[in-house]
Amino acid sequence: MKLIKLETLFWGVGQEITRERIYMHKHDFYQLEIYLSGNRYCRGKLSGDILLSPGDVLFIPLGRQHSFRPYKNKSCSFFSFKFKLQENINLPKSVCKMPADTFLQWVTESLKNLLLPEEPAVNITADQHSELVTMLLAGLLDHWAKLNVDEFSGYEVLQFMRHKIYQFGAGLSVKYVADGLNLTVPQLRYRFRKEMNSLPPEVTRYHKPADFITAQIMETARTHLRTTNFSISEISSMLQFSNVYNFSRFFKRNSGMSPLEYRNECKQKKQEEIQSGASE
Image (cartoon, rainbow, N blue to C red; front, side, top):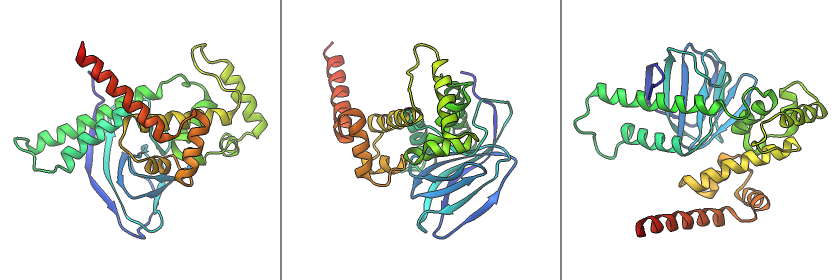
């Protein structure tokens, strides 16, 4: 596999203490943060406040203004990476949260083993250690670059909505999307339907922008419940529901089962597959 070429400038474990605030700034390198504990706000220029929770990944492109402030004056910890890319790749052009999936979970666990080992690593030199971190980071960027070229590539409204769903989750409104695209709500609905009708036949279509937002949130919720060990309360927070009750009600209304029932069903199916494979 051909890895993305990058120059790692800094990597390590960061921590923001209570009441600490970092004002609007920009830099001549890319920055990536994977959140481990606590919550924090980031404000990107034109993107508004982005609430960051454990498991979230913040991507800051080259030269984009951003600032940080604490959430309820509480501390947080995160992995921080600063790097330069030696080639052009298809990544977001604005400060945003990146999508969480099984590959991200694997990379995060691998980084924890390297940067926060329970026992000191043996037979690994400092150069090898740095090379492993760089390879994991390059693999994650490559994964996102391919993910960014999806069924909505080239569709302005749908791509904009998907990126904002990653950032704001359940807090995203149709009015905010319309304002972000300098459209009225009726104009947004017209543009949305036009783009939906021009999608390939195999792509699921939605009649209204609100339905698309709901479907994307449900897809992310199912992924977390199926592939991670995050608690239902943590997933609710990541998706920016006001409380776990509202998340559970939303999930059941759109799937017919509670988040816990869905997670248990996935575990049971996985166990049955394992037992079936063992008996063959």
